[in-house]
Image 1 (cartoon, one colour):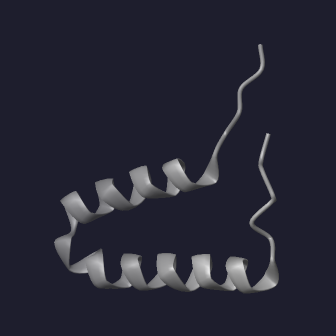
Image 2: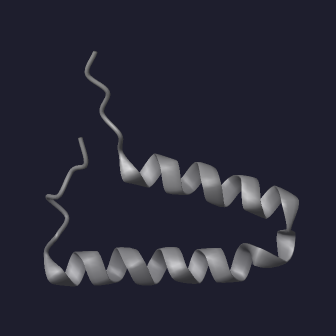
Length: 51
């Protein structure tokens, strides 16, 4: 059995659940997500896939 785990949908799902539970976390979650995506883009690690 081969299971591929994509990081972005998993992070999105966890963030969505946390926002439903604690809406005040929205600002922090969005900021951390954007900073992470920006750093990954700048460092050129967009080709990394977790398997």
